[in-house]
Amino acid sequence: MSMHNHVAFVDEWGNNGLDFTKKGRGGVPVSTHFIVVALTMPKDDIVQAEEVLERVRKKYFSKGIIKSSTVGTDHKRRKLILEELLKAPFQIFALVVDKRQLVSEGLRYKGSFYKFLHGLADRELFKIFPNLEMVASQRGTNTFMEGFIKYVHQTHIANLFNESSFGFVNNQDSLMVQAANFIAGTLARCYDETVITDQRQSFVDLLHPRLLTIKFWPDVFEPYLVKTTSDEQHYDATLAELSVKLANDFLHRKAPSQTPHVIDQHTCLSYLVFHFRHINANRYISSFEIIEHIKARRGKAVSLHYFQTKVIAPLRDAGVLIASSSRGYKLPASEADLYDFVNHSNTIIEPMLSRIQKFRNQIRMATNGELDVLDREEYSMIRKVVD
Image (cartoon, rainbow, N blue to C red; front, side, top):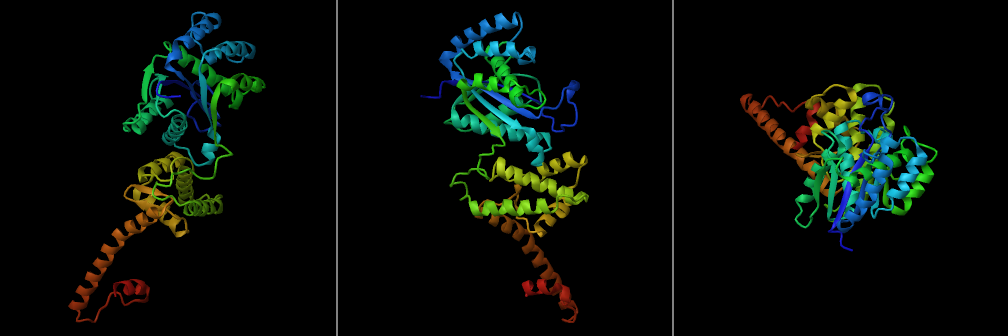
């Protein structure tokens, strides 16, 4: 079956707060989960689906729109609505992310939180439908959807074989987006600690026949590391596992420390591991992104010099493998990453040694060979290299 004529109506449930002790905006508790729902169908079925939804809307929401929060905790009413809603010919794709696990993985910077979600939703959706049109409601700035649309454009539109496109509608206009909202709110009542109900099983049972896929993160059944294709710079599983193991050894060893720079090392390394395992084992992360992350955790900015000398350097001294290039930092996952690090270091070391050599020769000549600045015991290693 060709997926070229498929369309997905997308909505979200939850907020981007990561501090679960606080109440969010307007006294709303910070959700423990973030849920994305896409209702997918061939374009030819839209008219039929909308007829079903319009009947549901008139019957249960009179003049209003189909909305999960309107039904709230009236579970009996929710079940009746679901039974009729599910007569429409769509399938449900759902992504359920436990945000508490994100925080324990070291993800406290909201910019990164959405970035992670965008990558996850995009990967899972486009795995099933390589050419998908999407429709979502415009809800103002700084929402998951706004960034997701940018992400999809950057990731897919550049690829000419891909015809995915994204449209915005006013939430009031699209019955399909309203239905996505209703189902996302229903799934929240099955998983989110702030609204979970003892009716969760009956909701899941109702939705089950229409569930194309429900993806949980973290997924306990997923393999330990990000799957990468063999052509991606010859991904080396042994090296990748070693990188993660050495990083985790450091994190467990230094966990209780209260020293600010050790906490910053912890923040930086947790983020590198998290990114490596769950987002992209091949991407370098810029100093700026990691420094923003440290700033979000400690509440104040740190300088690039501090970051290089008090965070990255001590991690390497402690035996953690961190590759670097002009693009930033990462845990190494391939031989290419290792050479990136050595090459990068070499561009710094070689010119310095050459300067020391010139300096030494000038002094020697000026003192008729009597003064050798590298004569001291402390400089024996540099002397060996220069000689």
